[in-house]
Length: 610
Picture 1 (cartoon, one colour):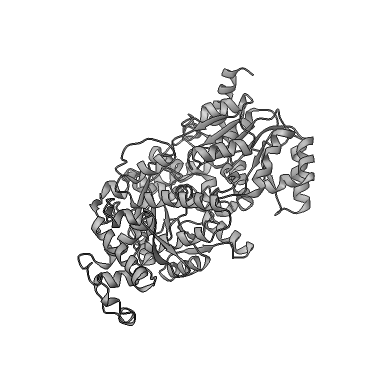
Picture 2: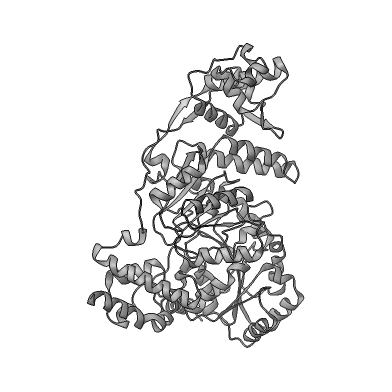
């Protein structure tokens, strides 16, 4: 098949199967390269259309496309979505009974499948390898390829064995895909998966529909509740917490406040995790409260917010997690509550982590970049994209653009704080945490101050020009800049090698001053999808949503498997009255037109009649 014919066939599949008229971004180049037999390493943001980059070549090339996915719990939904499009898809994993597995294997060997999903662990099985050797494979797609990065945020040991795909099937093209990777991680993926000759396709990391906001932590659950009530009432979202206990308490808190919230962490039994995940995917307006064990590969398009109640360990992890919001391109929020204790806790975790000194330095480097993102006075988006090697201009949509913070010369304040730590250690041979140091600077006659006679120190009361919250901000930023450190189980403050430069007046310390709290940057929306509709189309949109919900319940699939909100929005706006006109709507392919077309026209007709 010639190159032009391949592209024409790919475009025809895009329209006929998926219902789209044009490729997005670099999809067309990737698809044509893979159809032609080339290997590819693809970096594309969540919601950018990565799946089409291997699904269409698998439909065009002879044989079955084998997809390596780490997400057994989500394979069913991925396969259901493809089957709804008329694609012959199946999976093999440990959740199936023997008869079901044998049926799928027979379909694979008979060439009756277009796509077969496997977990990476399955390729350690001799039986699976023998099965693959007996069938005809069109391509291998390695999804979530960043899992191969040994010190990455989602490392999976089984991914390290996937280099054998090249050894066993050297003529079969491979595509590795991820939404998150620095240039160093990209090189690691290429090396570990033996993709040295692969062509790299790197799309923009920008997700302009996501508004990034980082706030000072002050009763974070109350702050979260304010966010949900004022901006995301009744909407689906994810809340990330660092510990299992925090997940449980936060889910209980939200439930008590009338929010439909569910917990998800590795300490729950498998059945509970599967049930909660299924409810999140299938029901509208569910909030999932989770550790980072949840979220990779989640296809739910209408997640309107991702909130972090604890500081992520890296910019990569933060980007990956916040990227689960707004896959449908509609306005969404990435919200993070960040405070002094987060910095103390993360530094302590690094000091006690497994691995050698090089590994701890790597973790510290990741944390430093995350802290820099939190403390910047510049555009958050510019800083985050720069981390991934992308140049951009201020977005006008993050908190620092909408409500710019000031920078101020905090050198004197830093000297006062560092002097307090120095005098406690040198004059009293004592070490204390942030709270005691702040009490000393503010001249508070607390029981602890009197017990240790800290009111006799020369630094006692010299910091009255700042409030307690401001002093905690000073400590946080000194920790972020490496001018102060924490040690021990109690998070006591100690000086670093760089502290002397500040105390010796050889280094200026610029700090971020938190802006005065204003109203939320974005007005609340009950339903973002409906809010963008012409007023006359809103009632039909709601009828279409109700029809979709009933259909999804009847078929036991998530609502987005039937149609995305964007497709329903276009139908509501255009109100097609014929199947031919409905077939031109983006997201309505031949299979969905045949299955749902008549029912949709009935809904449109009833709305007009009513």
